Length: 410
Image (cartoon, rainbow, N blue to C red; front, side):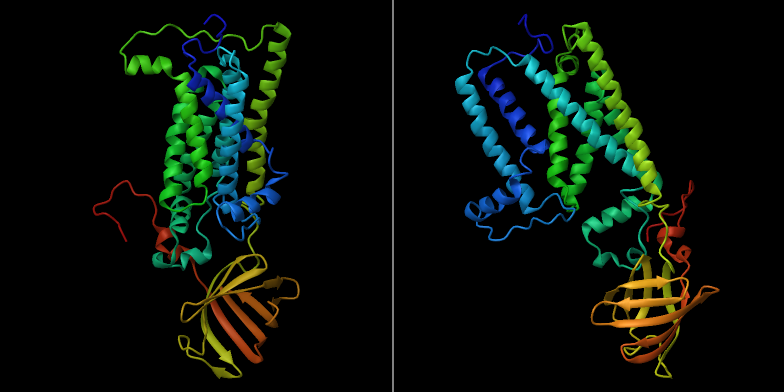
């Protein structure tokens, strides 16, 4: 036990050594971009020949739970199992993996810290969950997906979103330092277990990644929480923890401290600054689309004939302009049609071109009224539309109240 500088409490059985070998290989393959060069060629073959999946998408869709990710997980597990067994057979003389485990846990700590700090800043600066979009405000609960409800729930309250981001940031910062690793692991586990359950229960396609983070936090707790375990479970007094230098040479420890300062500055300072800068480009402060808003018909004319607003011939129930170069028409039957919608604010014209439909409409916008004129589907149209005040939506106008005589559950 004398040569166990970092984890003298661990009794190294053959099974524990096997677990460390497996964990180092498995999470190394999963986290580091080692397999990215062969995955696109190899994983479809595994999917077809092993799991009978004829076609596997390689497109990056934003989902972390694609067939690709599951095949990658399976492949990493198999490779880690084989290599760890080979390692065990050819390295029977090694009495412990104290140093290897220590370096592995340092890698895990910084990986977890990076993930938590990055996601924390994304919530604090309101980049991950923004306020509900215009189309979402017109969507019924019955039409919403479980993930859509989660995004609406989080984005509706900026205060709660910031609070959850601060919790992630707090856990991530604590993980950057050895003395606060256990506390950071406990905070990170509490935060990430809640995130993982949200992903599972509301079908958010980040299940694999969030599960990975939870498992890694548990690994840190198991390896660093023996003193806490003795107090809580054994009701025993524990000795003071002595944190041994990472290296034997003073120069190496100084170099390590410099590297640590740079990494901490990057994770806490530079990443936060980048997230702050992105608010103006992608977040709530990003420029709104020209004519941004929800518009409801007031008068509709087609070929000189006035249409009843809620008749089948009217077709347009709402015009939603939420993003640049894109608009949504909600018809009377609640069918949604997406349209390429390019607004020229100088010429005051709107170009609608989706390949089949090509129209140029002139517009005037004044006093919350939007008037469109031109040829649309071979018909001469004049659409006068009123801009909807977003404060009329209960989801937006219902504010915080200290006193509620009755539950306001609508």
